[in-house]
Image (cartoon, rainbow, N blue to C red; front, top):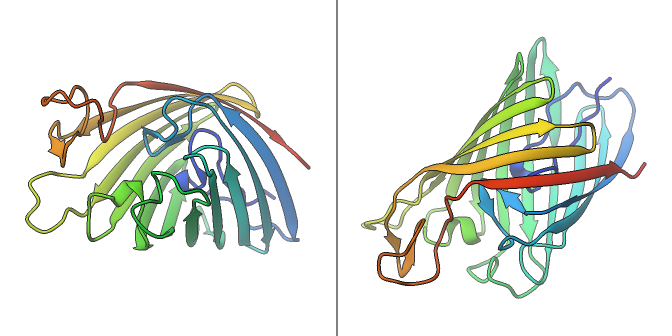
Amino acid sequence: MKKVKNLLTTSAAAAAIALSAAPAVADLEASAAVSNIYLFRGVDQNAGDGAVSADLVYSNSGFYAGVWASSSAGNGGEIDTFAGWSGSFGDLGVDIGLLNYYYPGNNLIDSWGTDLTEAYLGLSFAGVELYYYDNIAGNNAFNAYSDDGFTYTTLGYSMGQFSALVGFADGEEPTGAAHDNDYTHLDLTYAFNDNLSFTLSKIVDIDDELIGNKAVVGTDPKGLTSTAFDDDALLVVTYSIPLN
């Protein structure tokens, strides 16, 4: 039987929870990974620096819970916890759960507010996976310019060692705001083996405008140095190893 596991290769814990058949007995899995870029939803979260992460996941009869920790996402690092249920109805895979992000350090990502919690629902059929995430509590960098939270949707397809994923980030703009928080990114991944993978990621659609005093992407038209997003293509190399 396939085991419930979280994908922790080229994005953070929330990037995807793999859909699979529920194991008949309890199972405990642990792994560690290192990558040259901390890529999360098409955005470099660590200013081009690498990241080291580890995870521990317990599953039993379709239910699972786990913790994921990373050295990146600011000086204080990041700790994510999640719990849910994953199973199948015929050829249709279903995954539902909650995910919480915690940033223990006093850094930029959590300076906008409290920890972030998302609810997610995943469906899979014939190699196609659809995931929907809804911000239900707290806020961080991904909705720092919003007052009503955000949603994030992915559509992915896998064939052998190759996979593609399109992600749609939809931040709810403050009432009357002139800017648009939405963007779309594309990730193309090649898994060389069970441990080594390569991902090419790029933001493919976003408004080239100002949010506050920051350019959304590219060169700031007012000559400012900071940007909210970078639309340059990113090559992410990830090496992961099971610890049990």
